[in-house]
Length: 336
Image (tube, rainbow, N blue to C red; front, side, top):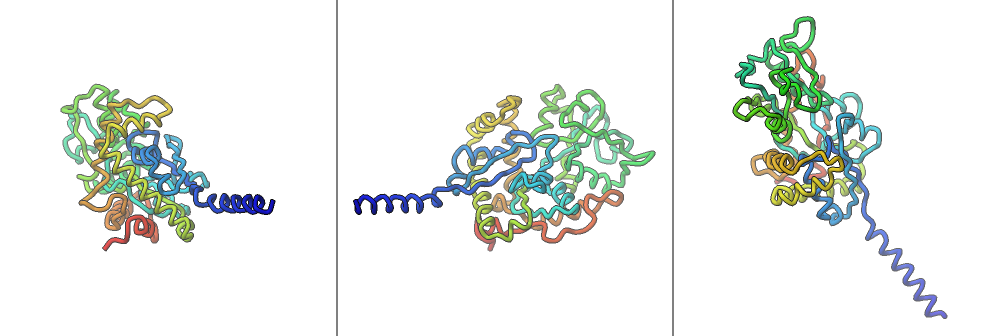
């Protein structure tokens, strides 16, 4: 009887000891938009078990036109959000202490796409025209660009008339505006698929116009960086995420399939997602640096652009403590 009781106690203690080791740390990641190949790396990391390998149970929440990631985290709906730096810094200035811990896209995919038959060949030709602009945080670099050009966008007689663009390309297809906001990886191809040939379009890439700001990055609340255990979880999240992105870029056909498997709407097509992933691959690695690591010079350049708006600046003061390398240093090792 004593032996059996001792054995039972031993097995119970062993089970208790094994519990914490096998438990996965939970994290919720809020994406910026609906399920598509722009976010392939996260879905791949989940599908291939890269998050689980790092001891994480990650819930990935898709976004949409009515979802502002920075507001989601402010309300406690996520641990980490994927947002564009202009939007996050604008939210930060309003009192939400957001901090960038990793930068997934190291280049901008934003463009203004114009019909060649509209006679627009250079930015100076925008004056007197109607331009389609996204809102919801995506408008900030556009207005900084107009300010750089010296164009007013409001008042009784603006230099440029703004068409508040929905999240579609109808204005250019229906001749409501000669130019609309697009990205290299998504809406541009929707315009082409909508019936306007590539040769009939002209793109003004923000990267070429000197107004490119940082886009998809990981943001958390400042208080979470005061907790070493949370920093460790975030480092594991970043490391697994970039492993997911590396797999996605090296195995694009398989990764497109994973994206489509996660598209509950059924709206995405294999052709469009394949093109998207191919274009996204150009945004992730810059100058051979470790993917996922923020270059402070890029962040400062983004801030300079946002502060440049004379009439309607996106932010009014230079942020302090808005980004940190503490998480990526732990994930990949400090830069030498």
